[in-house]
Length: 331
Image (cartoon, rainbow, N blue to C red; front, side):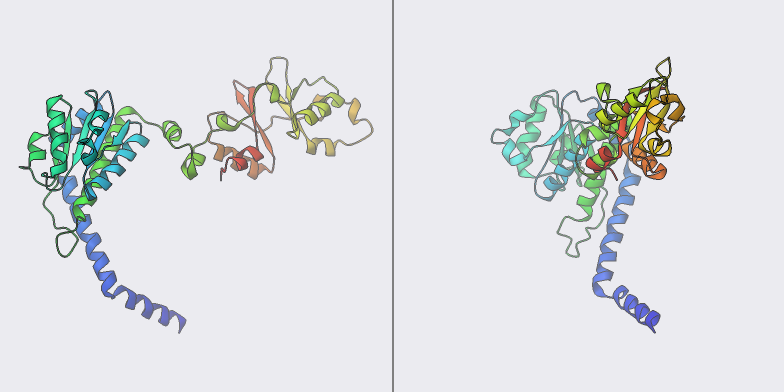
């Protein structure tokens, strides 16, 4: 009975006018994106070339809904390694034009290509020979004919049943901005490490933190020689407060580790007189400095240990503790 009730409820929801309307909207916008992908050609290639050759910033501008899309495009460009900013076309006509230099390039968005507020901006780019990339639905519009590269959206229906509210057209503009950003990203060879530099905050930044970002170095490292007495090892462990001490061989390589667990396992009246090499655990698990902090946390949890030494050429250059990962929000 319960299964039948759920099936009936799902069928009722699927058949509702709202669900039908939503599916129609998404279907029309999907058709628009398919048509857009098929329409790309030499003009898109020229737009990428123009933007890639820009020595300054990429200035994005648009009015109304196109402006909102433009802000997102500028943000995506900036976060993927291309200095970019949004300039409102109305404000540009009242002083903000000074934000645009001859070293910059401009991406202007306008569905009609005749947005009055863009007129001064178009004229400014032509006067000072600033590259202009257009996004518009009209090939014969002022914006398209004046641009160095006009990205003309294919003729498709807006998802709005009245054909008035920008829906499919703005979706295509947004996707076109993503396509430009990714092409430029790939040309630059942008990496995850580069991405983390521009996203230090939030969950994304935490996911991309490396061991190098969190590890302790230099005098903070608890290290000792294998022939030292355990009394010195305990002093070193207590002073550095990591619950362990690394054991170095004669060449400065990590030969082993002494942990709080090793102390408990070897607890006896003779412990303090023993040599470190007799108590240490040889061949401890280590990690490289370029590894993601998330990988370090996985190893720490899997092995039920609290610290990992960080090695380069078998020599310790750092130490990462589980508390470092937790404080940084690594999960």
